[in-house]
Length: 342
Image 1 (cartoon, rainbow, N blue to C red):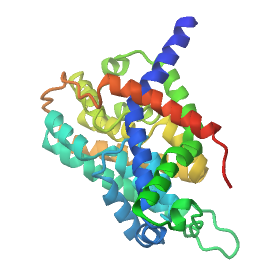
Image 2 (image 1 turned 90 degrees about the vertical axis):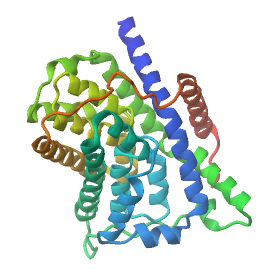
Image 3 (image 1 turned 180 degrees about the vertical axis):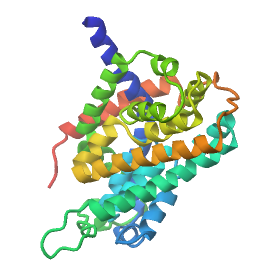
């Protein structure tokens, strides 16, 4: 029992260390957005009904090097500043699946077909998720339209206007490193605890040795990929190793889509901030698009030339990861303990 607890703690810390640099980067980007991007600009480009805001949010998110945890504070900031719920979900779905760095890593390990297919799959997933949320994410009442309700007026100091760029940046960093950690910290830590339990319970290499090809393998990879935390680039060598063990390219793609796009911490945050219906639609979009993408990829190619699966791509040095984890916990603790100013 003690050993099991140690494994859970180790899994918790390992996941925290892996995600911390990118979550901190996400807080920083969210702070910049809150300082430099006006609510009117977000409302104009990412607010309102129709497909154009969804497409803009999806295309904007694809090249950004944000993982499924780093994208959370950025997307919440966009939503706070006027992005529609559908556009927010489109950004949440497309951004963590890929990025400039992960596309290059994918090309180096899995070849050009995978490198082209991944961003296309992220584009489709973002659009499908945004459309589903626009259609079914808001339950209209009597006399309401079925579209996304108007965004709440941002009352944060970052939206009130201030004199000087320095003051705006200071307000933005306060928003990114104090208010946002306070808003998402609790569901984030709960999700990390769940990820630690999963890490302790599932033996290493178990699925790579027991999975084969076809739809059953894709379903299993989807069940594995949805709750765990893995960044887009870090998931590539894992997928390459699975392919070397006999997994089909389509099943590996399912892991590459669901692993970066979802995790327990992110889902808990979406559930808490955007609502239960939006979180369910988010999951449905990821699952349906991942399975469809896997089937299409398997119909195009049957094997992949895994060039260098043994060279694991490190997302950040170990010392930086551990230092970032300590810094993140300090930020969360300060955000929880600091009195709110109304």
